Image (cartoon, rainbow, N blue to C red):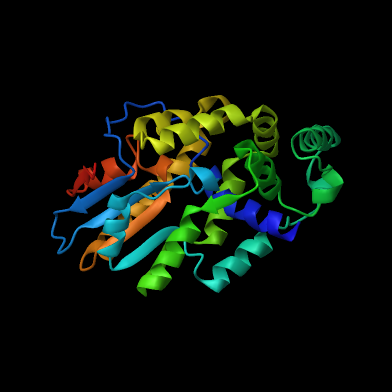
Length: 287
């Protein structure tokens, strides 16, 4: 159970890029997970790499172009710096709910959640009563991958950074992400989304990821059926805007390898388009 919860909490990273369909005219993007940022006074190029956060081990890949970009980079920046033990401890602490689910949810919501848990994980709501609803959401969502052996892209990059002896940083903190999730979703929205989740969309997502199809990924991982406009802004647009305020100073003198959920690359308020509007040249690395 301990390892399962650890993996589930890491999966919380994925939720923020699997959740909200943007009704906008998104700029067309070439098929590439790796993008080079240059110009606008930068001494060295930096790189954007879109991850799927977690994936079944047999499907895991890291292209040679990504490895080359990582090798010439001076720093690694992720959404959250899980190389920092304090962030890991904070993550484990916040995986537990502020109050038991049996007090937080209505009898009807508890009954619905119990039915979903039993159907999709074989667990009961009593077994997860002390966890946050987001941790429960993660446990259920992990099952959609249909495998027990998972790889986490962020953890792989951290290991690469350790071998290269370069600094690892985070664009956000665990505390910020949990607060953002709490404000973005109602309990009812989360339970409804869990009831409707299945493995078909995850399979399609992995297929698009393996072909580096940014537009295809954006279309799949942004689904307005289960997400409000308020949620979309909180989990995608506002965070992208915050990141693009932070990134210029980080990139100013050194080459930075940014790795974050691929859902943050596309769209009108995606990181690529926002950096271009800020005066940077952002080009796909195709091979």
